[in-house]
Image (cartoon, rainbow, N blue to C red; front, top):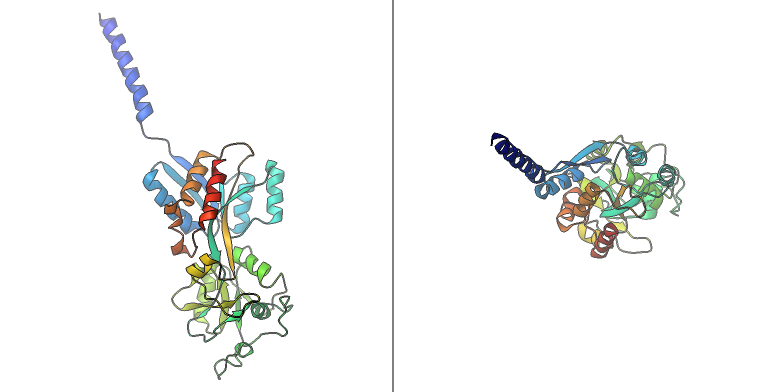
Length: 311
C-alpha cells in the first residue's frame, strides 16, 4: 500500500515538474550587437521591444565603424548597425569568411545637412560651392577657391574677409564617406581643414566658433546651430532640410540607413535577429526614429523589407 502511494506521488510530482518546465519563464533571448553611432536608437528599440517581449535582451558593444563590420565578418556580432554602407573590401572579406554575401535591411532615411552657427547670415549653398570650401581640387566644377565668407557673398567688416573654418568628421564616419562620394568626389582636402575626433567634439567646435562650418545629420542640429539650405544639382531654389523635405525626396542629400546581418542562403533567419528586425520595421519601431534625426521608411520600402524577412 505504501509502495503504491509513493508510486502515485512520484507520478504526480513528475507530471507537476513537466508542467512547470513547460509553463515556466522563457529563457532570455540575447542578441549580440556591435554598433557605431546608433547606440542610443538601438537601446530605445530594445526598451520598446521588451515591453511586449520581456525575455528579449540586447548585448550592445559600441565600437568604431571599422570594428562593427569586422565583428560581423568574424561572427562576434549578429547585427551591424552602421551609419554607412559596407565597403567593397568588407563585403569581400565577409564572402571569403562565409561563402556568401552579408544581408542588409533598410531601417530609416538619413540626411546630410550643412551646419553653421545660428547667427551666421549665409542663406544658401550649392554643392559645387561646398566642394570648393573643402578641397583644393574642386572636382565638382566650381571655377575658383572659396576661402572666406566674403567669397560666398557675405559683406560687412565681420564677414567679408573672415576665413572659413572647416571642421571635418572623423575617419570611418559614414557621413564623412557620403560627403566624399557625393560632394567632394574624393578630392584633396585643404590642409587648413580641422578634423574632429568624434561627433560631440564637432558640435562643440561649431558652437564655439562663429566662422566655422561643418556637416552632420538632422539629429545634430542643436539649439545654437542651424542648417544651410542646399540648391539641388541643376536646380535654382535652395531646399531647407526638414523631415518633410527628406521624406519627399526634395532635399538633395539623403541616404538610406541599413542594418547588416549574417544569413546563409536557403536558411531561416536566426529567431532573435528576426524578432528584432521585425520590430524595427514595424510602425512602433519606425516611430522611434525621429528623435534621433532619422526619417521613417516610405511604405513601399517597408513592404519590400517585410517580404525579405519572410523568405
